[in-house]
Image (tube, rainbow, N blue to C red):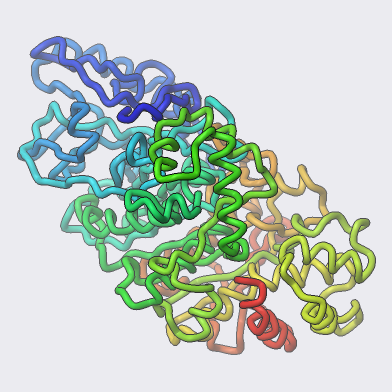
Length: 629
């Protein structure tokens, strides 16, 4: 990898790419001097999934794969017909690739982007997966802490021998808390699922998922979109992106601002770069760049809001609709906080606070970066900041003044979205406990505003949705951000809006936390993504998927159909699952779809907000600038 600071970190049992390829013969497959880009060997292609609906196979991390193409490799080794290989170091580092005519590969279907060609995995019936596709130059060496640098997508002549193996996931990004050996800096890639037979003339709608995780952990691997594409009857392409996280993605400070080659918000800008890459290249996969919907959960949903308000809404967005699931961003930190975190980081790494600080940071080992990221856990959070370019102000202010992209929205929250954030019920029994829990999230809350919050959320009674002090606290926390914002955006956008309140639990979270958390934060992801374990026991490097019970499987079918239908037609009802209730637009009676499970099947139904909900949401908007939301 280029640059003296770009050390190697293994991911799920394999090394990050060394970007080299060596031909050893003129016929047959060329041998690859690269553990990531070589032809796969045993235990490297497909694993039978134990989670989800039917246990059908799906792609998962490198170290957990089982043999599928071993015989193919033996047969191809002596063949002069095709010589599959990969591009050389200069090509991958600059983005300049050779070009050719119609390309084929024994590895799988090939998509030709003009500057590169990728062989996908078609082991699943009815769809093809293309994994680990770079959408920018690797942010390593002199590009560490730099905004994403576009690939040089010059159209060149490609041959079959230039086809890149894209049958598996790319490396995950370095996480926080960071662990040496987990993650790679060279991780800004995306994954594409297409219906079998999709081609540049298909012009299919596209759904792009931005994973959550507080901007400091998670990866695309935990959110496979196989079922989305399979249930679309050939009508949808799905994409999941990865972006720089934690310190590597969101370090900010005067030392970065003063260096023209560096800057803040790089993880957010990675996401934007991925969306722009999709605009340029998704047609080759069969997608329509004018029909892109972006979605995300938690900080991924918060990122969606930041892309809606990007540049103050003054530029056409690279999407036509959004999905916001419990959108969350921490309050914007002021400059003094981000500067102190920057100074702490460079001091821990051993870099001077002068004009050479960026050069020093780029020469630092990955281990030093990992150590610095872990040094101030809980004190320094590396998050999006107001940079006065992409993020031009506090989100609530931009929304309130109409400075955002007004597009159709499907958005909502989970019924107990705040439950895992406010402590256990026995810990929250008084007003003082409630204030303490909320202040932990919003430390700038004034005494006057705190008193107003207690009045906005009066003590539990027969007329309030909350029946205990803990529930009262949970509702206040939930509505401050996770619940009210998608509802509010839908109301002011002037575009079609569909609201939901998810009321089905994630059994993994219940097992880890206890039944009191209910339909907690991230619960819907269990149903939308094959039984993914996104709860506190989830492993980013080795995603875990739990098999559905019958009622869970039924709700998963409903939910995937609703979400994918919205991505395809901007209406969740068009391709709804058989027997699913009609999802009324938010403009009709302020309705919420309430996805739920019964004894043996889904029991979803429309519901309506309590009469006081708009007033409570309006109060949070009135203090949002004070909270820096």
